[in-house]
Structures are given as structure tokens and as C-alpha cells.
Length: 239
Length: 227
Image 1 (spheres, rainbow over the protein chains, first blue to last red):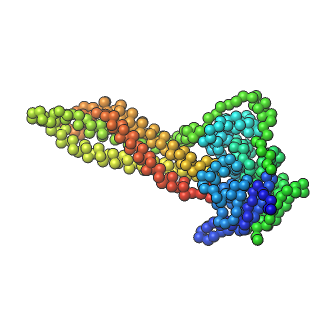
Image 2: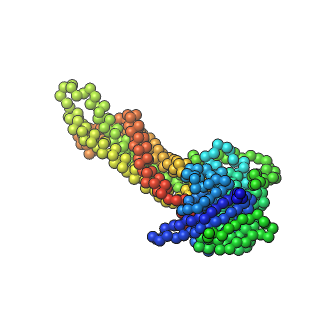
Image 3: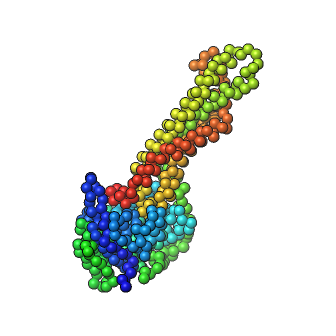
């Protein structure tokens, strides 16, 4: 019997029409990851990193292939079910933070729980303290540095206690010192059991992950795993 | 299997002094804060809607005033000069009232559609982010609709209140352009207020169709990828 993995991506194809011609973002891509892994995706712009993150997060659909996250087959979900899936299972972190300018740090963290019945304000506050922003709860994004904004975005991603964190170039818009702190925070979260996948151009940042995957032209071109880690199951895209 | 627990928050409450801060962050708070963030535009659009609502209230009150003036007068003796003049205006006023109603509706639709379209285009990344963090499509629509209805009903309320203040002040005022020194009768009926709210609601709904289609047609993943 096949092993069951937390993330199972099998022979995924995804293309976009750009200027009338089809661009293959993922071309027979396959990847298996277990729960609690920390995986870095590397590759040039347009290689398919963001597309892969969006597909794992249920934000984008595949043209063909299988995508299962936490036992849920994303191809079978409708838009509303995918939104629920994202809310309860996925935390997104973006390069440009994507915070809402009119809301304070605390309110931004509470946005994913906006329509929920449970009051998560205490948890939001705790998360902000956890990411080192205990004194910035009432600050608007414009009053914060890039690193602080990214911390707010991380707290926002954690508010619903997701099983997987997906970060697209999380350190792409902050200085190297802050980037190191952010990656350290990712490592802490990963140590606590959160599965992490992040796309990055930064070799040093990627080097902190247990698994490093290089994507080129929509396929895995190389892979590397930490010597300590023996739990990774990766398979190259092309069958 | 995954260690099924929240990120470690040990010691966190100690660092915040154990205080608990109740922050309500619901859709209404979001919509109100958004309206405040874009207050210049909100006030401008609301002002446009208010002006149209005011115009509608004034014209409808003139029509209503004429109707009330002639109630019970029609079959009593020879009409006076004032009655003749006002009677000749009666049909014209009805036509004008209909015209103004349709014009208000069309212009309000344009104001709402224009404001909503600008808002949606400007906030496309924000709206895509809301979808990415787990909000459902209809929840995002509701919030955009909420923003627009604040604008519409705020404008309608302002225009109607201003109209209600002006109607008694203008009642029986001798407008120079009517001639003959005749005071023009005006009366504000509650049904006029209902009409103006109805026009506001219809224009809000019609004006939101193009922006909502815009949201529906845009893919969050594409917006987040391309900005």
C-alpha cells in the first residue's frame, strides 16, 4: 500500500494564456511532503513557484493532475469549500504583506476570523506578542517597518491555527537582518509542528529549510534535503 | 502525524500582563473603517447622491403642494387668477417630477457604479487577499455592497433631511420666475421619503452590478501574482 503524505501532488499541469500563447507554469509536477516539513522552493521568476503555492492553498485550480492536502482532494472542492479549506487549513504570507491599510495590526490579524462566531481577539494579541509586536497592537501598517508588517502578516496567517503555512517570497521585501529573524520565526513555528512551504530567491533563506526544491520550467530541476531529515519523499515531475 | 497544537504561546500572557483586550473586528467595522479611509471620495460621492435626493424631495414636494392646494377647490365657484396659474403648472409639475425621478435614478446609478468600480479596481489586491485568507466570495461581495450602501443611504439621508428642512422654508415663497407674486405651495409627504429611499436602494443595486461582475471575473490568484 502507498504511503499517505500530508501533501500529495501528482503529475500536475497548469498553464496560462499570456498574450494569446499558452505558458506552462507547471508541467507534470509531482511532490510529496509529510506533515511538519519545512520546504523551500527556489527557481527563477516564472518557474512556477507561486503557481504551486496557490494550487496547494486552493487559490488556483489545476488543468490536470491530483492535489491532496491533509487528505482533502482539492480538485473536488467548489469555490466556497475551497474558501473554507483555506480558512481552516492554510495560512498565506505574501511578499508585499498585503495588510489592510485602514486596520491596526490587531485588526489585521483578526481579518481571517471576521465572519467567525468565536472571539479571537485574545489569540490575535497573543500571536502579535509571539512575533515580537506586543507594543504595536494599535499601530497602522504605515507606521510599521517592512519586517514588522511581515510579522503582522505571519500572525494573521496563524490566527485560525492552520496546518500549513505558504509564504511567497516572504523575505523579498525586507532587509537581510530582518529576513533572518523572519526565517528564524518560521523555524520556530515549524518546530512546533506547522508545515511550511516558502518560495524564495535567497539561497541563505532557502538553506534554513529541511527540503530545498529547485523549480525550472514547471518541473523540479533539483532537490536537496537536510542531512538530519529522512522523512522527505520527493519525486521528479516527468513520468 | 502532525503535532496538533497552536503555535507556542507559553509566557505570552505574562508578557502582556495577562490583560485581555476585546477588539471587535466584524464586517461592519471593516466597512466603516474603509469608508473612513477613503473619506474624501466617500464624502464626494455621498454629496452627489445627497444633491440628487434633495432635488427629488424638492420637486416631489412642489407636486405634492399643488395637489394639496387643489384638494376640495375644484368645484367651488370661478377659479381665481392664482388658482388658474397654479392649475396650469400642475400638469407640468407632474411631468417634471417623473423626469426628475428618472434622472435621479440614472445619475445615482452612475455615481454608485463609478465609485464602486474605482473602489474595486483600487482594492483588487485587498479583495484578493481577503479571498486568500479564507473569506468566501459572497462575504467579500457583502462587504463591498455594504460600503456602497453606506454611501447611498448616507447621501439619501443627508439629501432628505436637507429637503425636509427646506420645504417648510420654501412653502408659499413667491418665486420671481413664476410671476404674478404667487406663493408656490409645497408639502412634504412621508411617501416622498419612501420613494427617495426606494430610488437609492434600486440605484445601489443597479450600480453595484458592474463592480460585482468585475470581482467575480477576476481570479484572486492572478491578482495576487500580478498585483
